[in-house]
Image 1 (cartoon, rainbow, N blue to C red):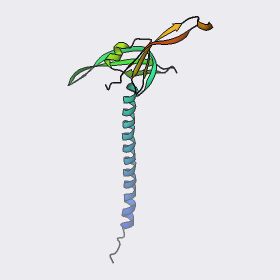
Image 2 (cartoon, rainbow, N blue to C red; image 1 turned 30 degrees about the vertical axis):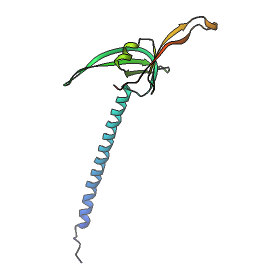
Image 3 (cartoon, helix red, strand yellow; image 1 turned 45 degrees about the vertical axis):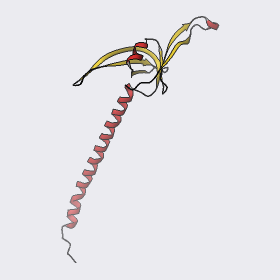
Image 4 (cartoon, helix red, strand yellow; image 1 turned 90 degrees about the vertical axis):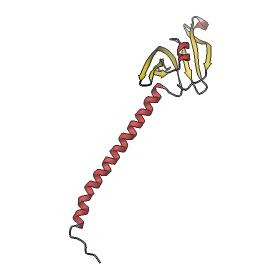
Length: 142
């Protein structure tokens, strides 16, 4: 039977802090990586949410530049019924159709745009709204 070294106990105690430090670094790297992935996911869906609804407050277009060329982008600033402001990406066709003050709703079926017209003095109400000129466009992948 082989003899144990006098220093085997000391060697194992010296390795424990090294293993603990390695474990801490692995945990830190995993947390940072998952945080970056979460941030990237939220940023993608903050400009291109799957569904939204609100009133068009502002709209703008611009160009992104890369080595492959310049490409246009179109954005709408919406105000939801709760008062929250939301910037969304939209295709050219719906960008041209959308006017400031219109209601817009995106679902899996498509994009609905509607004018909101105030009506005064109907049934004693000082102002209410009626939706008219609703149209649905198919959802395109941009």
